[in-house]
Length: 81
Image 1 (cartoon, rainbow, N blue to C red):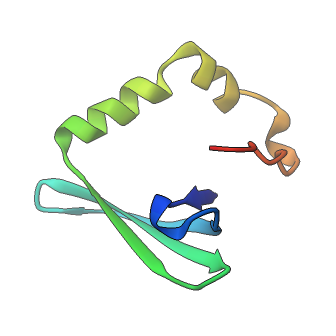
Image 2: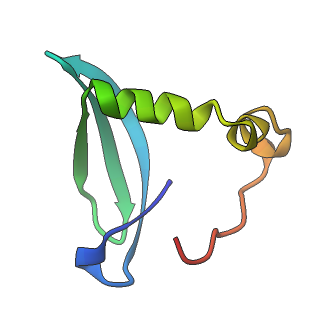
């Protein structure tokens, strides 16, 4: 997973999702960055946000990616995102 923040300028973070837990009315996505620093990032997602994610995943363009056979290789860098 690649992450960027406007607060970090052009710094790009590499990380991985390590958990998804329910905490009251939120789903908490737990991410650990690997480089250039080791951080634990948590994102609390409420119901309207969850529906946005579900709707985004169900778009045809995104569904094609999920069912693609390209999962075996490391993807090319997405460029500016």
